[in-house]
Length: 316
Image (cartoon, rainbow, N blue to C red; front, side, top):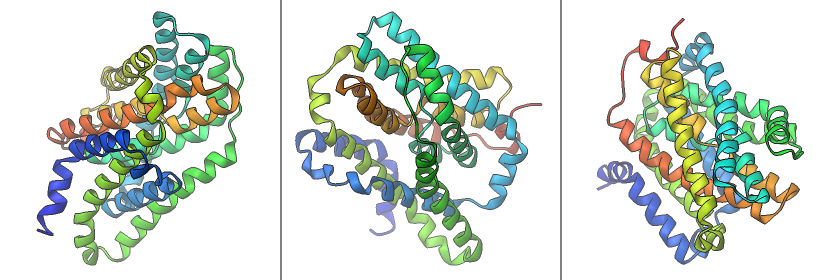
């Protein structure tokens, strides 16, 4: 039982995520209490991923820096542009449009690293792209929002750096170092960590649903449509732009996930600070939707994961 339970949990990732979300929708207190512990949960997941990697993986990403640069470039080109086009095409009200554009102008979130792991994509590349896009965000996000929406926002650079360090870098390094020191002894722990990650991310998704229950039940159809199209176009454009520019399949999948999944929590925080509750709707809905689609995409791609070093590179 103890051996098969982790495997069952991994195989039923999407079922658990949807099930937890439905429970949260009908009874929010079941998962709302998780809110103060979301950062800790994500840190545990990153620690687990660190256990599955080694320092050589990140050395390889350093040698193939073009892939990371391409991913970050597409992140800040595709998502803001798609957001603006959708706002114009759907004729969204100004405050709702600002919210959609805010989501598009934010960096990728740490959830993309988790989804890349389960999709058997290039996790080190995903982590590096998340770090780079987040470090650029204090300059890029306000500039893009002002360009596309005509509104000014401010992003606290050092707050973002601290957040990324404690949620991503620190636990990931801990996992890498521990694996390096105790490789053989950690094999039983490594085998169960993916299932721990599944339960954790499913609970985080459910917490988002619980905290935004009223918003979801009000069913703001036009904003939901914008969110669905925005997320889908991020995945599609990220993948095919990478392929057309010479990237291998695994690199394209990694960049697709990175581009399609945003730091929607930052978008909600900025919208609440500078605009209002209507502007925050897009970020709240995007947070739920991107995680569910990310889980579904990971399930599909994990079954057809490519192999081979050449598949991880952007061609010279």
